Image (cartoon, rainbow, N blue to C red):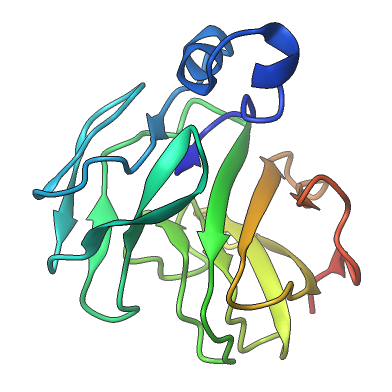
Length: 193
C-alpha cells in the first residue's frame, strides 16, 4: 500500500475504515495494491497505474484492511502511476514494506520520477539499500538547481512488515526529510552523508 498522506494511523480513532480515512484526509494519491490479478494498479485516490513484469498480486498483506500485497522481484517488476508533485513544497508518504534482504546496491522501493537519476531533477527516492550510507535506509530529494538532501536511519529487520511515514519538505537550504517507522522515530535517524 502506498498513500501520499498519513491516514492509516487515524482510522481506528475516527471510526472510519482505512479507505474512508484516506479519502477524508485529502490524500492526493493512494494505491492499496489489493487487485489480486491483472496489470492495472487501482487508485483509491488519484490516477490508476500499471503493473509491469507480472509481479505476484495475491500474497498476504500487512493488516486486515490491506489483506493482499504486491510482491516484486527487485529487478524487472514494477508498479507505476502518474502523479505530479510539482505544486507541493511538502509531501508525506506512508507505506507498508516487507524487505527480504538488505544490500548496499541502491535497489529502490519508491522513486519519483522513475527511473530516478539524482540531482538535476525535482524528485525523491526511498532507498532501503543505500550505497552512499552503508547499512542504512535512505530518503533523498533533489531539485533541478542541483541541491540535494537526504536522511538515513538504521535499517529495520528483514522478513517482516514495517509501516513507514516519510515527510519530505522542500524549502531551499532548509529542506529536510523525516521518518517514522512502526510508530516511532527509527534508531540512527540522522542527516545523510
